[in-house]
Image (cartoon, rainbow, N blue to C red; front, top):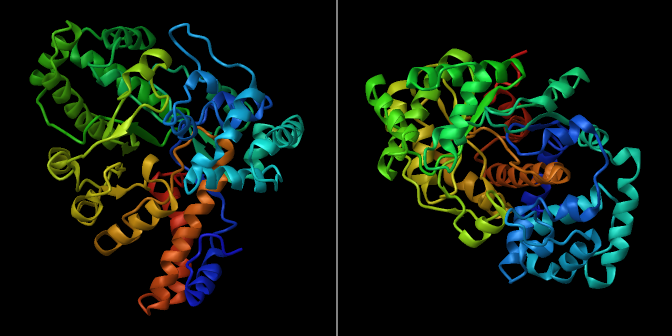
Length: 466
């Protein structure tokens, strides 16, 4: 199948040959947001709407952009406003507006899942909505479509989820008890404990102290509590931490300066400048901790969170109201890289929502600092065009081996194989052009696509440490 391959006949033939070297390799999913309870409990998915629509921000934000409120799409509210609970009604609304997704990756992924996971060949539209809903619902009642069975069918070798340091990792403990501990691993995500501007920060810090039995009234105690949670996460299988800061700013403060900022934050006296300084310094603190415990740092800066205030007030955080912003990586990362960028113990995977920086900033940085790797195009850039632009923009300066392979970054569990397949096809097409232009021998291109699809993410995220 030549789906997404180059239109040039010669390149298309080469792409097909290269794709065969990656097609059947296991999936490494080193960064994502699947709820681990889904796999720990292994309960059937409730209905197609709650599988494809309700948790998928790509879907709900597109419909919301055309005036369809999230409440009609089943997105839970936090203000007590009514929410649609009828899965079939939500599904019909999606079908009636399916034309909005023409040309989008959401349509591409969803139709691949329909066809390749559920065997649905009909095109979604108003007239076929109920038939497709019934066909998928019938499959979801079968044992072969429960989460663990699909995990195995998808050929996922490792799936990383993302949890706060305050999470007690109950689901991961259950997975480990069932022999799944090395297949589904956690990731340490401390944003809610290092951002004084996040409402409830002081209460969460107090909860961290209670959880660890540590006096977090001092900055030193706060760091000790975070180290204790990192140790627990590592023991539970974590190989990386994840940091979604508003900017890429880093800062190196001495303990006294950091303690002053910490005390101000606990007392509620922090302004925006102080909060940015504290977040920036904590990135360097986490880099220092990584030297000791080996967690790979993932940086996801550049998103203005909860930009849609009305959406945030009604439905809370992380429901599709975030917007990318311009991000300075050259100056922002310099303090951290000056301190640790050449330390062989440190590994940083850097993502961006600002693709204008690919050629100007990110590729030269990754091409110069041994600690730095470029993560896959993320979120708004996770599309066939975005993946192509990424390879075209960064390969000349960073090569292939300063990148970290593909990361699906999704809550939509059933879309994981579709997203990886798209990335493998796009890489096959990019490499095919290099082969056709006599810039890369075919055997080296075959080796490269296998590395990009499997070996690189496994190595970069230290998933091969066993």
